[in-house]
Image 1: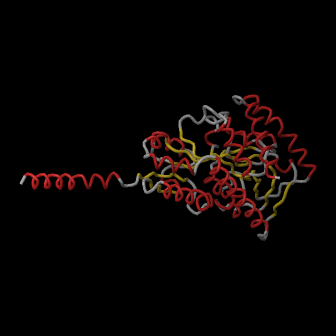
Image 2: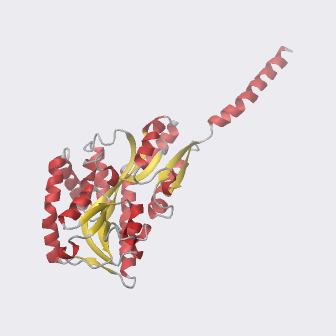
Image 3: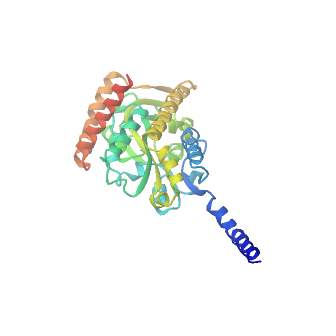
Length: 339
């Protein structure tokens, strides 16, 4: 009789505990803020494959839901939304955050790199070496990468600095704004999602942006002339809310760590460079479009005109000379290793 009561008691406890155990095994759902269009190659070739890898590796403890467009935040505020936990993971660009991430802007300096894969690895290594601290002490950093060198996209041809003089040109960062001003243009700061309307409404006469953004934001519809010159690469990030990461199950943390870091940064940079090369060829093949570099003579003139921008950045940026030198060194090492 006592055994019967005991068995009933155990059964009752199991019945009560079963829903709790099932709930405990439910995956943690994280919201991924992605301000760009869902069709962007940064998503289709980068973020979605990554989150699928992480989910699988987590052993069912983690689910990541991507929110494309401005649902969780725009390029201007997705960083703050990540800090507040509105978005637990986010993709964004550093242009609107120049004052908070001054050292990271080193990749935006002109004539340093023409390969986003190599520069993305170099940027991550600067972070891993601690040279970018304390810029990242508020977030869990999953990836740091670059968009390829900016192309000058205009409605009118630009062959010389005289053609560029006085033109209103959209830029995405303070460094690129300084570059535009040094070349005689008038910089106007716009985020990627503002570029199309800026050109179509005449707010700007041209846009400094990578080929990848030309495709994503359909800028080939409002521009006809495209000058390819290495005027600096735009740094970007994948961040995670620190408190959210700290509260995850061990298996979920391990999955995120496994697929983040230098390898993830390199993949995103490589995707960017491949897409950039492809888009350059695609636009060049379109009727009415002209794509090409400036002349050798103009290259020398442009580089000389821009040099003071680099010198000023080194002088005014915390640890500027150290960061600049380390970035150059890493780029050289990566280039040598690729041979």
